[in-house]
Length: 445
Image (cartoon, one colour):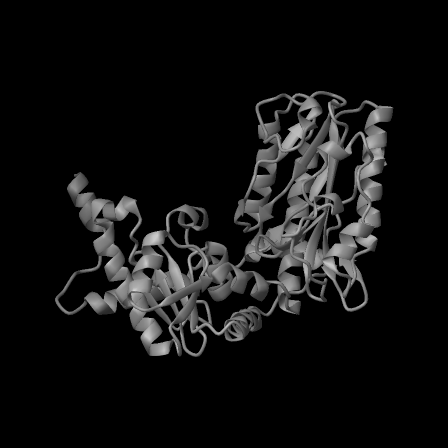
């Protein structure tokens, strides 16, 4: 009976000699047409973006802009190409994804961007369809991964096979034998050196390429922030005495994923006495009536853009204490003052020298930075407090098209609670524009 039922309903295509390539191509076309980046982000996200008045980015133009930025930086530094392993850099170069967190610690996917030549994506086994939506990937080849998980004690042999493939590309398209690589183990550098290829700092190339956002990138980032803030609203609605920190944090994850977001980089949510000092990750602690609840989204949302926002809420129906009000006022005032300073052509050093800092009893517990760049993730530059500036802190200037987060953590050294606030700010031609819009907790203002 079971065999007959299986026979009547089975959908397996007949396998015939000579049909392998045709079936493979049909399979690839089907998968490419159902790619998440082709299907889009769904009715919920689209309705929220329409309500917020954020237009859709032109993704073809965005991808071309990014590739031009990379190649301009490679030319400026006299490289023949870039070899990228960081999945965020691969996303920037190709706008394609594949198991982003897994490949971040399992180097099984990489990309070669020739300064004068093609973009060649080396992808995981049987994953050619994952970049067919991109207008900038010229060729997909199988990746040779020489991490120990795959190569064991034969790593040296596999590195040689990997090196031969990279050397072939450099010889054909490199123009010179200098390439930039973002992340690589020593064996890879040694193998390329043996083949006469010089390796430079790919992080410098990519961070500078990613520094100035195009108008389409800003639209994509705005959409990611709208999605993040909608998830924050669901999170705040769930905040009631008796919910655990982990349960509350799960609401942000759920809301992000439901809108097509990708992942969250940290677990920075704490409540009550766990808010001081900062950097406690969320736990099973049950949130109580009257507790402060502070969090940092660190969220990678739709289009792969980071929405890096922090808020502090008051749980329950109790009136805030004078201490809670005081901490919140200091943090909100610091954010307002420091945001107002952000404008084009101000130097990094001048910006931090003029920035407001926590008062003396809060300064030892200060946040590690005043400002940091943001795009597909946290990006260059990172600007410390003036007192933390050292001889090896890089200086520069804010430029139109840069996006930075402005940070504040206010908690008294040895105190019970603390307040975290963070906003995401676009540098414009005349000043700045705040991209984040989620309101501050009214009861604490």
